[in-house]
Image (cartoon, rainbow, N blue to C red; front, top):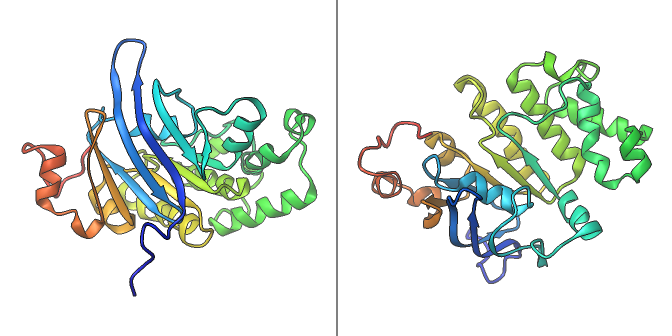
Length: 264
């Protein structure tokens, strides 16, 4: 059964003419146009330095774009300030390569921090959470296979376990969009599918749109519903996993790359 046409699908993210020049003059993004539709699992490909991480971090303005617009569900993220920016960011979860947990806090507190966007200022400052939120956080920890670890310090967990805490935090955030920046690059190969399946669950079971950067081609082909490739800050290719063949690989990565290999 074929899916809905692009005209019928709702846009989650629209990126128009996005450019980023860093203070040292590095051109990281050069006029990128991209549309991400609700419910997609979009993977961004490219060599190191191609602009993948910069693209993701511009979407929620962890990095400020130099030029262009980013619309999230039709609302201009690039123009947002103050409360509007905080509200829009609360709908966007971020999963980092290095987990980005508060290492001295408990696993439970790290998961509960996903609800801070819904808390008042005092609740956020003093980390005050309701019993309903605590129960929900424990349910999410069970869902990612970490039941019984809620009172452990985050830095007592393995890398794979810490990344699952970050996924539970995204569930707690009730985000509409998930940005995952090389989420398994720091993990042993044997653990990567385990973590990716949980991110896939955010997409499939929770209906969250996912934008993910990956360098493991096997993972790309397994999880992506659509692919976009960057080279030197420009979008050079987009298509489906089925269309991503060895010829396309060489077009994106260059003749010196090996199609069967991982690309950093």
